[in-house]
Image (tube, rainbow, N blue to C red; front, side, top):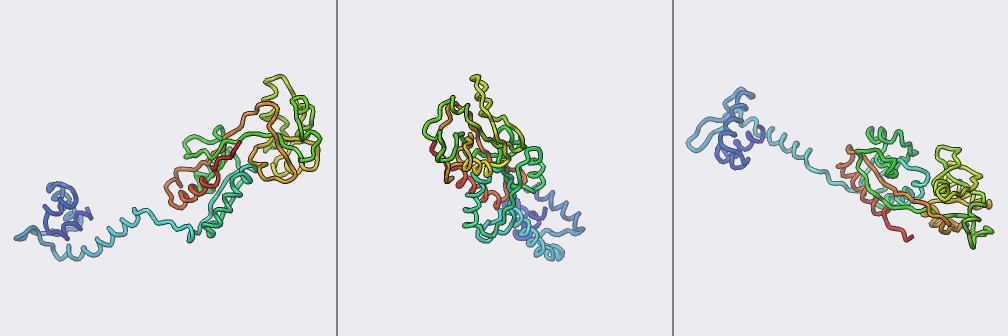
Length: 291
């Protein structure tokens, strides 16, 4: 209705105002009738050519243009400048995702948007949806089987498992399936205390067993354990890409890998700042790794 009043003030003609608004003349006349009731004033009277505004209508001309301009500004997508951005980005990540995704992402983010602060929270599958809904977390790094439904998501990469050990390990040169099962293993259990993982499930299928001697809650601790003992471990390939003192090789048994996703909520999907952050993340975190 205010757009109609603005057009009538500019055109002083119901016909031209209707053309400008892509409406019919009866529609404009109907809105003018409602405007007259709202302002308790005729607003326009018949003139030799079209209509003439009343004093009350002329008083409204400036404020209406200001209101419409402000409304258009609210609807106009804001221009996002990374170099001037200043807000806190919330991430939820496992110990693995911290090293494989978050660390290189933060390095790239610092170069492009140093004013953005980053708050990293532990990944808690049972709480992540609530955290996303409340805005405590903007992006969570999950797997397809743990990601809540009805969230936006993008596949970052597919990960595979390798067998890792210290570089001077006695079995570094060759690791048969028999030797693999005979050696003591270490694994990561985020919940703590678990001694069974995807490797054990794969061994079960062929009727074999291994001995897991150490269960830790952190991949960073696992790497240190491998450096200082004869233990071996099946670990994600990306975790070991640039680790000194360790070597890795293909396990003597097929172990299914996993996909890593970035997921986010509808509330931040259209936000220009978060959209820019996600684009940067996809550039840094989704680069393919040669098997």
